[in-house]
Image (cartoon, rainbow, N blue to C red):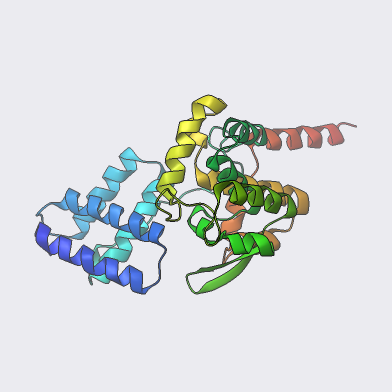
Length: 279
């Protein structure tokens, strides 16, 4: 596989493989984007371990470690698919963070400002649904008129089924939105053509809201609403196993990423320790 046409054919076959593996559309889109960037880096040069290592070095100079590893996972998966395991590279070793970056995580106050800025629009209800249930943005299509009436949505993804409960306050809000929008059945959040909203629609609308809400654009994206839900739930319950079930995680190790506290909270805890030691 040394020509761009060969790369294109391999990527096309890999896409079919990902579909057969029942990967989500968002995952497939990301993998293909990462692999195409890798193929562009190679151009018509022969594929070998040195080239993959060179690309890894290029990524390391251009992106954060977590982003580099995310891209390398996609590339390694592709290399294994085409039978070139010999070209796979190791991921970067990242020390586990004990607290989150405050310039990246959305606060409760910022969330409230976003809701206020979006008041009365479709985006307000989208934001409150994601943050009120912890649902993935790709799963919003399962929030249907019928689900709202029942008070729960059944999500089927990657051969896994889980129930998303819709609390009473959110039920009432969504019923008002459904009535106002004239939606009779099916997905609650749809485009003008009647198709379920996708990640790009919501991302664009949320970014446009930043200035009005006086919230940094770096903090405003759908997945951060899910993070805020997780942190808030964990503060109330301290039950990471139940939270993992709610979020649809197969491993609590993934869930722990969502429950990391801010640096300020850690400082407050350390000051309390000092106070106890000195009294």
